Length: 471
Ligand code: NAD
Image (tube, rainbow, N blue to C red; front, side, top):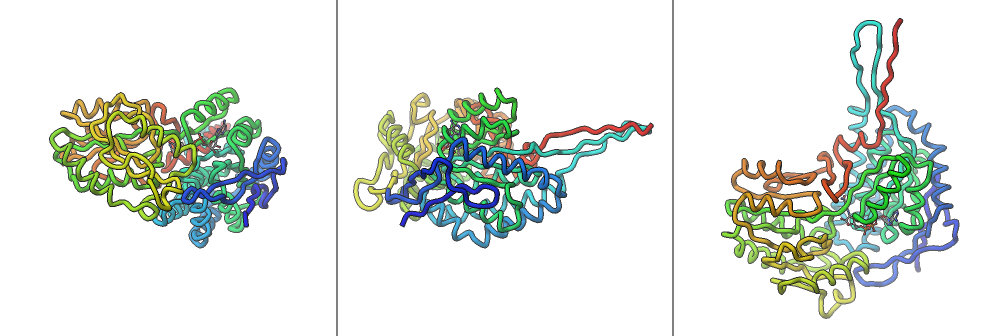
């Protein structure tokens, strides 16, 4: 039987004002899944009104009190991870290890900001001599609109919600219409965990109907968007017109640079992860392999051997939407060289019914080819050889994007030299960790503003100066 998911507004489920629901799909089987409320301006209006009523009470609580509620939400995510993972699997086809990782990360965001807001959510005193008392304070914006995509649905929602709520904002979240159920369940868990009614509302629906209405609503004082460059550009225009700040976490075409002196086992494993993790549907996937000429063919051979061992449905899942599946197949069809492995869907069997694409490697690709420049968002690697450090740097920066880069070299000084010259928001040298603590965001077309880490806390607060003359 099909389950229908209503919006979550003011601490309870609310049927869509228009009385219609949207179908979802299990991409592993292409069988129909749950239905989600088709929201529009009326539903957004109700949610923003609930958030507006709730925001003053929530903002008035101390950081310690808000932190306690956030810890309880993290507890609830951990305790009910099984349900969250099931809801996520049903509309994404993700494999168990990926689901577990995202559930753990989701709880970690709430834990981190529960503590961080107590330690760093306050302003400072500015000394101006006797006779004055001047200080700064961080104040919430009020109602924040959070719009998220389908590739890491719960994780991306929590990444924005945790700091926004920690700083005392109320939120209206609009998840992707393809993957809304886990964000709705999160809001239910948060309410049960003690988050006051109206502080976190979730309205589902399409981008043009629900997302655009949220961005345009005069009660929304700040926006956070994760998604495509095209939608990001549109929302930047809306936010500019309304003079509200917006964080834009957009796409990427991130390089993985491998020098001949690198730990090749580590570099090959990192390349395989770029294909396998969420089937490459990760904005930060380092799937553009730049390999020093002297080891290029050896690295390609090792990557191809490892990639061919990946098991569909075990090590990687299907693509999540029909549109994404069609887009990846179109990019593969236009590749200028034959694939070293993969190159299309599974010809027969159960994986041929789902939206599975075979892990694919294209070696020695023309850097001008579409497959080398466009964001693929699928289990696809391209390799390009380079001669020396200067050429590696030029190729790494030869992209419109600037989200992430990885550098592998036995010479750490060279790794760090490149890290400082690559134009991207985060660069990992020799597998350096990028975690909840490390700020995340883009250069160039990958967007602006930062999520994660201490930096994100201040994205969701405005700084006020108070100065008193003591007479
Ligand atoms: P998308 O831009 O189509 O949709 C993202 C969200 O925006 C969805 O909730 C959608 O309903 C909504 N939306 C669409 N049109 C809208 C409009 N006119 N007004 C308001 N909202 C609208 O992106 P997608 O296809 O869901 O996600 C894939 C993209 O997301 C990729 O490009 C990927 O790189 C990017 N992404 C970025 C990050 C990051 O952190 N930088 C993380 C994950 C995904």
